[in-house]
Image (cartoon, one colour):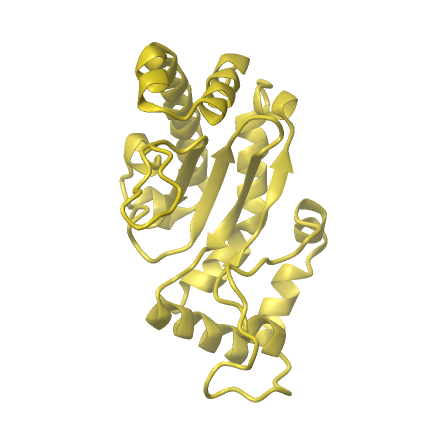
Length: 222
């Protein structure tokens, strides 16, 4: 379970993102990281119960959590740490191209969760476009389902958008709005009170169950 102390640590890190501050508060980081591992383990256990591909991957909860250290080599922002915890659960592990389920934990209402494939490599993106273009009626049925629309009012979001149709596709293709996407994911925000409630993990799992048909569709050509 995520407690208010984890969000308090992240709030402090956001305000004072320095190595000195982090070292002074490393015990709080260890506690917060431990809570995230616990949440991930619970999520993973429940996801494995309804997603056989994830279950067969034998994932370790620790390997589903992104490092808190930022890679600043090519960034103008030299802040050394991320100010959130990010967890991604998918077939083959987070370094594989397969879509999956995620949660981003941040302070002050910055927490959100969903599923899909975010910013895939060009070859993977082309496979996803072919799948959507070739089975558009199925795709449209999945993302217009009542439960899906209720959980994700914004629908499917793009991780980038082409101004023109991608090469090989016509502007009047019925699926063109989605074929211009550079990725496909869903997003639902949570308040701090929701994140720190005992029901947060089950709420995430219910969300993942809803997005699973979309994840399965995207994973099919991969």
